[in-house]
Amino acid sequence: MKLAVFNGSPRGKTSNTTVLLDNFLNGYMTNYGNSYELGYLANEKEAEKNIELFKEADRVLIAFPLYFDSMPANVKTFIESLEPLCLRSGNPGIGFIIQSGFPESDHSRYVESYLEKLAKRLGCKYSGTVIRGAFETIRVPFLIDNVFHKIFIAAGKITNMGRVGHFFNTKKLYKKIYRLGMTFGKTGEFDRKIVQQLAKPEKLSRFGSCLFRFVGKHLYWNILLKRNNAYDKRFDTPYADQ
Amino acid sequence: MKIIVLNGNPDNKNIKFDNYLTELANDLQKKNHGTKIFTLRDMNINHCVGCFGCFVKTPGECVFKDDSAEICRSVVNADFVLFSSPIMMGFTSALLKKANEKLLPIFHPYFEFLNDETRHIKRYKKYPPIGLLLENNERTDKEDVFIISEIYRREAMNFKSSFSFTRFTNDPITELAHEISRI
Image (spheres, helix red, strand yellow):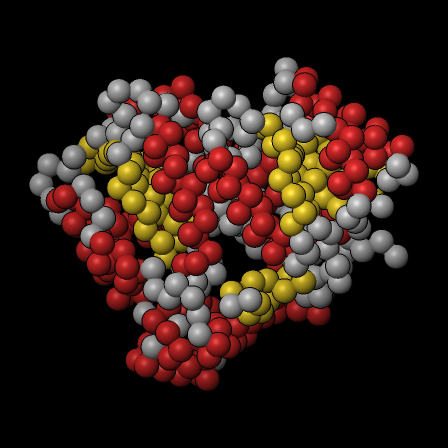
């Protein structure tokens, strides 16, 4: 299979989307005879090349982070550049991967409807959309040096408390994405069971939400704010007209 | 009432779209509503690169200086914001989306659980209600409009305000001006 993979993250090569795709593609490449080409949609200089990659592929995979409830602007720019290819015969099959910072998959369901319609509009066979929330949390373990925080995260891994503890178990998460890539490499389709597992939780429980907010505030934002000497300015309102 | 119009028309040859907005603004001015149109394609706006600098380095402001600061200031002090764009490949333009993403500084990094969903908390006390103005093309169908509207309804949830309407550039201008002035 000749796969064209588009990394739609505005953060480019140093993005969470890259981490996700690395694991997926490692799995994909275990199938003999598979190959892929990678395009970065944030790089405007590659716009022409990316259209060519799309045209020549058997299958296309577009992965992006959720920005303001839909695809980042650079992904939309790419989609607009595909307009002349709508309903062209020989268009590749197409699948999508969305990862969001918000923990619930629910946030990504609206743009999922758009993507399904987009496949129809292009005349591409739709392979589906993989959704994974709380992907920004993969950065949390690298920030932690406090003993209490370490214990908190270890407890989260073991107990999966409030259905959000598993956010820190990146090894397990990456293995799942690897297996998703492996089956995709064999069948050209996303394994429905893995897709379902990755999409959990669709919604958070009240308890899960408390934990997620705690982690977000104390183990991520506050650590970054303090490192940047910006903690005291965190509630600033520079644009309020008074 | 202070009204902000974000013109997401990327094509300066599409005069019809721009004219509609100009006439709408004139109509609103006549009703004593200060109206400002931001023609996004003529502005210097970078893409949001997701660095979160506006959350954790210079809270409330983008670390990359460009014309989006002016939009942020206008939006947080407005009484109504109209997002407008021709429909392109079943959604609003990449240009409008680019400007939308640069509104991130007006929100706060911390989360809250609102209507059973995780959301960012407010940075400002109040955000304006929003509306959506679209230009149809021959490929637009009801499903497209539904999908776009649902996503902008969520934009109003980000604003913690309300979603007023989805209207089209073939609707009479006076009707739309009337509807906005009632908000």
